[in-house]
View (cartoon, rainbow, N blue to C red):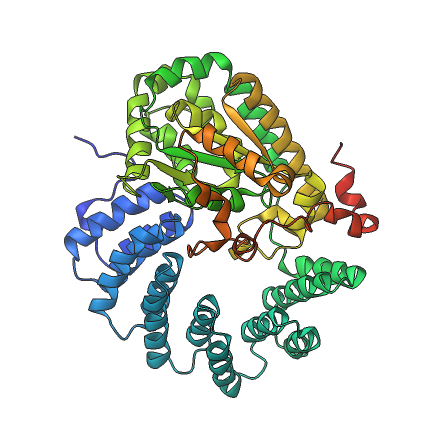
Length: 496
């Protein structure tokens, strides 16, 4: 009997080589295979803190902090003085809105690694979430005593000043960091992005754009705009009405998933925050489950070609139940008792055919916004870990938008009546009727609390964390006009 290709053999589970293989699978996005290898390693090395730690990090990076916490707690109990584990445990707690637990973990990390700035900066961040800027500033003074002009600390200090309306002090804090000559491009770029936001707030738009442009240049990562253009062509070619009609009847009966899709910065976080106020709804945030499924689908169905071409193989239809089972398990383990589970990963816009064929009873919400505003907002945002790789260049954003628009137009053709359009502008100008329409589409009774989304204590780990804690505002509508003279590389790809 031969093993599945890529499956580890028993004799290959020696550390550290096997752990490195698992980590490489993990970092390349092969999460299912990485999880299987971590599980096999834990059978042989059940008390190894490094394996347990990375198993928790897998869940954290898949967008599941609630699943990561038990693993990271277990690793911390085995290696209580490992600052790395305490920092990551603190982050997982923070993402689960367990802020007191997060504070304790960051304090322990700072105790075990007193020369590191990161634990205390993270601790100061928790204090700001708790609306205790006084405590945050006390911690930041301790950071500056050991690490003068530490860039992340300067940024956090600037944000505190700006919230109080002390804009001159906020700018000075950033200039202190920018005065350093030893910052790498990523660090300097991050400070410049914060400077751009501050200058935008005080209406110094030309200076703001200059800061954003330089910050993006320094933070830029390798990106080929043809990636999504080719992907859109392939998805449009393969995902026909006929294919969906053949696959959907074999799909899940679950009504739990609510997929919130759209351009980044189009209102996906706001939409999820509104839905999450409803009793029985679990806000899943940006989950990688359907991305993982796409990556592994050919292997799951034992196809000879890659996704999406493998969908046309007889093996795909014959083994579609395997695909459905993997997807159902991923969402069920998040919140088995929830009536609805939201997943607001914007890039699922390119996977709508897959979503609708695996979960034909799922609700699909398309967040729409003036593309000029959404695109500019992408350019102005320092996305976490460069997760939105096209955002550093106006032309790249424009080309991404064009591909996204093409593929969404295709989904409307092959899935007529199944996708709710939710324009951001309607949501902020006629909140009640837009919210009622949203609740009706996802199939839950009306709840007045959904209009009080800004009062939620839920931690929002995305770029929209501050916005969703404010009542509805319209100041972001038509913001692009303030920067119009700078946007020619973008606007040539966007029509009315």
